[in-house]
Amino acid sequence: MRLLIPIFSIFTILLSISHAVSSQDFTIDGTVLELDESNFDSAISAFDYVLVDFYAPSCGHCKRLSPQLDAAAPILTGLKPPIVIAKVDADKFTCLACKYDIDGYPTLKLFMNGVPVEYNGPRKAELLVQYLKKFVAPDVSILDSDASICSFVEASGTDFPIYIGFGLNESMISKLAIKYKKKAWFSVVKDFSEEAMVLYDFDKVPALVSYHPSYKEQSIFYGPFEEDFLEDFIKQNLFPLAMPINYDTVKLLKDDERKIVLTIVEDEADEKSMELIKL
Image 1 (cartoon, rainbow, N blue to C red):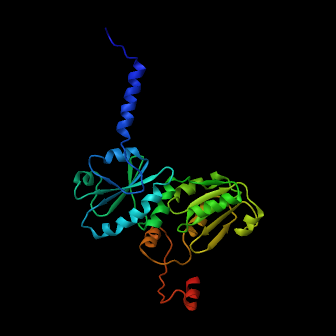
Image 2 (image 1 turned 45 degrees about the horizontal axis):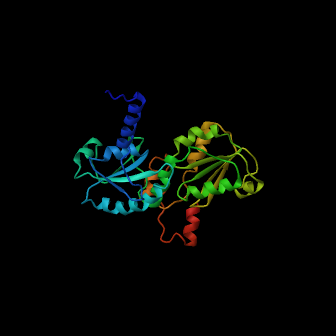
Image 3 (image 1 turned 90 degrees about the vertical axis):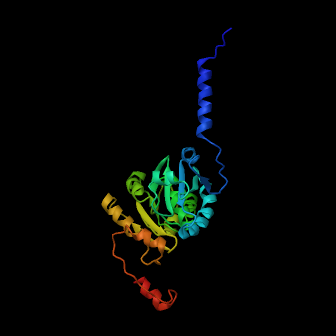
C-alpha cells in the first residue's frame, strides 16, 4: 500500500520548518542580547533593526558604553517595530570581527533589514534612544489636531529640533525630511486651532515652525516654499545659537558648514555670561 501525501501538505510542512529555522527563540525582554558565531545571522534575520556592539572585554571605552546600552535596551525594544541591542565579544569571535571590518573598540553597527551601516550617533542612553527612534518613525508625521501636536512634541523628546508645518503639504518637505531625518523631527498639521497659532506664534499659513525643546528657541518660516529656501531654514535651525560643547554635540556639529565661535565662561548662569551667550 502506497502512502500518498498531498503536495500542498508537503509545502505547508516545508514552510513551517523554514519559519522555525529563521525565527529562533530570541527573547525580547529589554536586555542586551549576547551573540556569537552560532546565532549571529539568526538574530540579524529575526529583527528588522539590530544595533550591535562589537567590543573587547579589556577595553575601557567598552566598559563605559555597556551601562548606556543596558539603559537604552528596554526602551528601544518597546518600539514598534522594536530596535534590539546586541553585543559581540570581537576578541573571542574573530570571524565576525573580520567579516564586518572591526578594527577598533567599541564599534557600533546598525543592521537594518540585514544591511549593516556604521553607527556614529550619540552614545549616552537618552540621546541614543532619541537618535535611533528616528529610524522607525515616519519621515514626516501627519497630525490632525492640537492634541496630536502635543503628543508628537512630547514623544520627540528634548534633544533634537522639531519642525512643524502648518497648512503645508507633506510633499513640500518630505525630501528634506528624509535628508535630515537623523538630526530632527518633522511633521505637518492638517487641522489645528487658533490656540495652536498663538502657542507657536505664527499668524498665517502656510508656515513652518522650528522649535528646539532644550533651548526654548523658536523660528517661523513663511516661504518661499522652494527647496533651496526651505533647506536654508532647516539648516539654520538645527542647532541653537549657543550650546555646550561635549562629545555628543561635537559629533552633531561635525557636518555643519557654519563657523563655530568657542566661548569659555566661568559660570554660564552669571548675568554677564548670559548676555555674552545671547550675542
